[in-house]
Amino acid sequence: MKSAIILAGGMGTRLKSVISDVPKPMAPVQGRPFLEILMTYWRKQGIEHFILSVGHLAHIIQDHFGDRWQDCQISYSVETEPLGTGGGILQACSLLSSDEPTIALNGDTFFAVNLDRLFEFHLQNKADITLSVFSSVDTERYMGLITDQFHKITALNINTQTQTCLVNGGVYALNPAFMKTIAKKANTAQSWENECLPQFLATNKRLFTQTYSANFIDIGVPADYAKVQEFNFSNMV
Image (tube, rainbow, N blue to C red; front, top):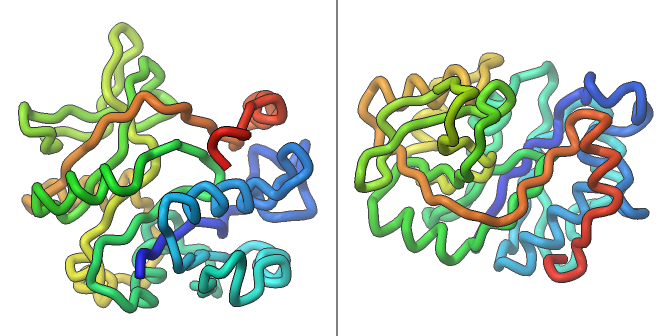
């Protein structure tokens, strides 16, 4: 069964001026919760089991999706206290029931990644984690990185405003066996981008990237949330 972990527990501090009564992933986009748009896309990519990492106003998400949605199984990894992106992913990994690769993604971004292509690359390279990336100069907002000729990551958190580089698109293919081992040792708040990934890299874990030119959408700030209301999702979801 193909599974996806979606981080949906953030408080959406930057969006409070626009949305304050629902979790950020449930912000309405073109008449639907953004999280529903995300899940529709990934269901069409073959996901059968969603693990929703929830915390702030969790009951709103649980009441909306229940334990089944569009023939998909829904599980909830509930944070009793904020765990950050890293703690959220690690806790959610304890609910994985299959040894096949899974994906983890942010609940406030949309990146049209081809799941079969991502998993094929991930397995061919025997990766622990494969990051879906795109090209950008905005490495203040997005995590920049450097890879070798085999697309293996050699450096993270690269900042440059003068040239284009690869940046993290927030969709990750995960090796469940590796993640479950790590998850047993972690129950504290931590950042996936700023703590977990650099630690994995420093300890020689196999971190790879696959580059996509697909649309990347981030609803995390009011200006971009306004733009996404006009985005054409019709060919994707």
